[in-house]
Image (tube, rainbow, N blue to C red; front, side, top):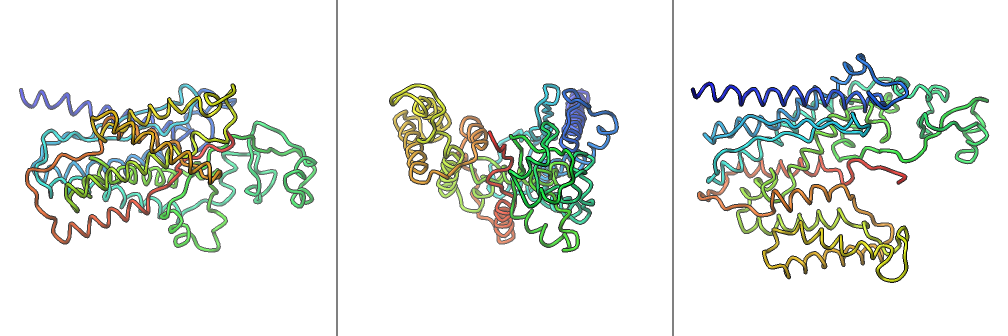
Length: 416
């Protein structure tokens, strides 16, 4: 009977994995070819779908290494744990870009009461995933295709030859040679008398990380540096995009907040009291950076006059949002409201004196998930055992991974 109960559960994990492989392959195809399966003039087909495995296989391999890093260390420590649950998530059927998944997770079925065990389980996942991500990126940078590879995605670039990256293009707008002079008169002189494409905004640009820069400068030889794609085209290179996303998820998990993997690490390294200080500091920093510039004194987009108009119309809503996600900062409503008002006031004054400062608003989604569901605190372990030297070294290595993998603005939509 016990074996019969386990088998259906294992099927759930397998079904979710297969669905996630399917959705990440679909998403990978759409990023590679900059077209949709349903909402394009020339929809993607079977061949493009098969090409999408170049993205989904390395990406899911890294994600799987991360989750099974947690899993095997938990099993080693005799902690009851589930197999990974993969979460398929694809927007292509409504014409919106996605990456095919929102990640994966394992369920620890009992409380971990040993500080060392908690550290071991927490650090194993990101380290395992990071190692595989580095291997994928090294291979990707070492085997960059010729610069003309992007013609498969943007055949309209071919009219400009290999200097196409001096412009930004799209298939939406035709611009004659005479109009190029408005953007680059010198280059227009050398242009053929023909029609070419110029890019409408908005554009999606891929962020950067210290590791990306390091690998670009060490793996790619000088003779092939022209093959390195710019931030607008890197999505079409499946290994680079898969590795970049893996670094993003690794950095996200390693944020030293609450019970994220990074929270496990700092709890094991520094103990309960220090964890509380570090976790709350980083959470406030994340919220502050995420919302910086969201409401600006220079914003005149809203209608109306007076204080409750323009950006001021949204101030109460935003402060309410901050109050909502600061649940871990005390049950006293006045304390939480003080934090919310204080964070907003500093954000607003920062933009007032430094108008060009802008945070990355996408991080507010993760701040919301952490603040309302995951929490910023860490339940103290029953067995408080200081970490030995090898674990301390591994903990610092994990924090270095965070620095190398973190991108302040992972995906930027420009021109909106």
